[in-house]
Structure formats: C-alpha cells, structure tokens
Length: 320
Image (cartoon, rainbow, N blue to C red; front, side, top):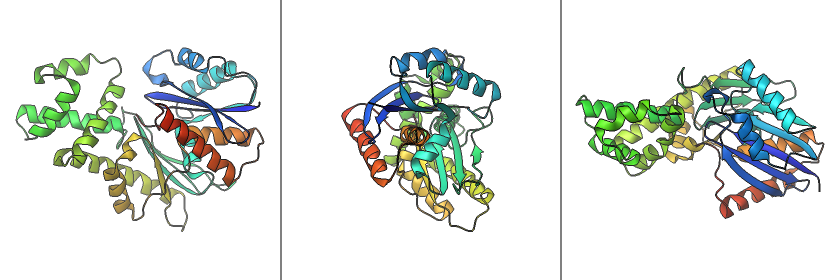
C-alpha cells in the first residue's frame, strides 16, 4: 500500500499522520514540538517520532516552525527532513500547511493563534502571492497568541499582588492552576526551561475563566482578538483585492468562541469553518505532490478519517 506522510509541528507539540490514496488515515501519532529556537534536540525528536514509517512513501510534507523565517533554521530543517525521509519530501512553514488545510485551495486568510500567532493570506491563484503578517516570535510580541495571553495574565497577577489593580478572582484562578503561593511566582517564572511554552499553557485557564464570566479574563481574550483582527485586516489589504474577506482559523486560542466572535465583529465577517486541521493540510499537499487525484470526496474522507481518530484517540487539533 502506497502512503503519504503529513506532519504539523508548532511550539508545543507535533502531529504526524499517514494516509492512503483513498484519503483514509492509517496512522496518527503525537510528539513534542520541533521548535529549533529552544535549543532542544528537535532533530532527534523528529527521528524518534518517525520511527520506521519514513520509508517507501509516495510523498511527505512537513510543516515546521520558523521555516522560511530564519535561514539557518530553514536550511537545517530541510537537510534533516530529507535525510530522515528519502524521496519526495517538502518542508514548509507550519502556518502555510495550516492555511492549505483550512481553505483547501480556496482564496482567503488563515488566523493561526497557538503558542505563537500569524496570519497567512492568499487569493490562491497560480501567480498570487502568499502574504504573512505577524509571526515575529515572543521577543517582538506574538500578539494574540497563547504565549501573549499567558504573559498578559501574569502581568495582571503581578499588578494585583502589588495592589496596583484589583483582580482577586482572576489572580486566585491563575495561582491555583500553577499550584503556587504568591511569593513563589517569581521563582517559578525565572526557573522555567521553556518560558514560552509555560506561558502559553496558561491560555487554557484564561479561556476557562472568561467562559465562567470573569471580566478580567474576558478583557485579555478581547485584547488578543483585537490584535489578531488588526493582523487579519493588514494581510487582506496586502492581497489587493476587492473580494470580501474570507477568513478561517487554526490553533487553540481560536477554539474560544469569545475570541472568534470578537474578531468577527472587528473585521465585519464570520469565520469559515476550517476544511481540514493543519496536519490535514500537510497530507493534502503531499497527495498533490504525489500526483494523486484529489476531489471533494477525497477531502471528505480525509476529514472524516482525521475526525474519527481525533475522537477515538487523544489527538487534538493544533494550538497548544
């Protein structure tokens, strides 16, 4: 049986999938994130994740963080991927494959907000440019991302503990999640091996607090949405089209209806439900590169197969 491989990796986790010519997913596997900026042995992690499944493939597409953003990382990622996966192997930016999956070849813009954030937009014709807005990383901002939400949350906690603002329930919720006393917060922060990941993990707590009605948490999520809406409008302006904005989403931050609804108000249109998750975008590109026939039926089977494995296993869509 001839298979294709798709891989999606962000700042927190990696999802690998194999699929056959009919669009059925035959394997789904998760692992740690392959972020080259953290100093971790991401190449070793990738090798372990691939196990014995990288041989005899019709095509492979890997979506990796920072690809085409930092030349040194990009060159290393391409070299490692081609060494580990012989044959027809393509490395792309992880946001590009999320865009490919969510829109499945149609024009539009993807709002991705997971550990980091970026907008990817294109009219998706053969000569149309692909536009990126954001994605500068935590040193520059990563506004609207899970990292940004976590950092804003900790900043509010510090202001409350100082007596500069009053946010008692919010502070209690964050410290309870971290299992920390107030006096231990600074030590926890500066002892973190991966501060970006740890901050991003707080976004779930903030989302839960907001859904429970906490005004401080909702204010932070609205701030994230406002940043993402500004990114989105900037990207669509650069597309230079009179077509109305068509946008979709990926990443854990966008699992919040509070965030999606706020963006919709800011940009004047509702989101389109993603056609495929990011790893599905990698499989779609791999199928095209393998020369396989792709139609709506194939996309439906791939989507259903991924959803089935999602419900039967511990697979989660990108964005942690």
